[in-house]
Image (cartoon, rainbow, N blue to C red; front, side, top):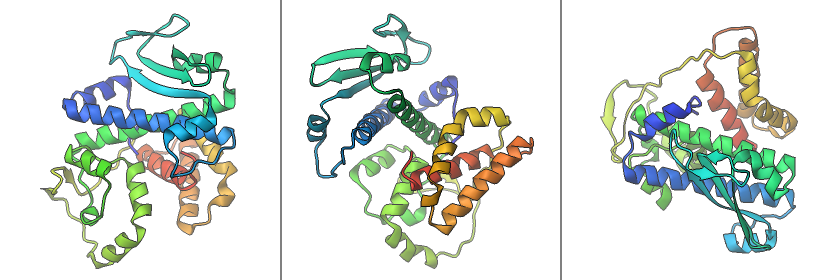
Length: 289
């Protein structure tokens, strides 16, 4: 997972994309936030989501606040207005299906106007933050000329993933983790045949995405207080669910994360990039992201 980007950095990297790439990325992120909203609302109401149910069928069961759209006025702009009167760059358009009422709100007013519980709003916002980190991951990889791993070339990838690759947009670590799980058998059959030799060459894949094969380890100056302010809730979620970590490899990841936290607390230098990758890999494994 990439280092969280500032608003200015996100704007700079978005400017590197063409109109089709920006439209695709924005659509993907908006749909991800809509899905996260629906998922959290269903969980809190005790409704089991059936993979064969349409979104309309799910909302008919929920009969509650629906996230209709996420509007972005652009870097430095606040063209939208919250119901409270505050100008907004990011505007959440929410619709109550039963009462047929629609509001335009900022994050701070979501709880006040919807009367959804504070815990639910907190879970939704945490989910939105994870999606924003996924955006940062895609944008950072794009600037670094990321390449699809060669052992993915012959996989029967979905239409959405293929469209993303054909637009020369990298896959996020979350997307790669899902593919690893989906095609675990196929990948296990091809990977033992590889030599394992590393190369520092740059070359072009059939998806026209170029990359340095050798990864760059990034170190970022971050205090323990800053680290905990950003990730304490996610770490607490893992702590509360650590009995569900049955994989030996995942247990090692959790131990590594805790050692990295200790290093940071002692003001030792460590890779924040690796910390994020391990953290979100574990969150995905536990289905907490």
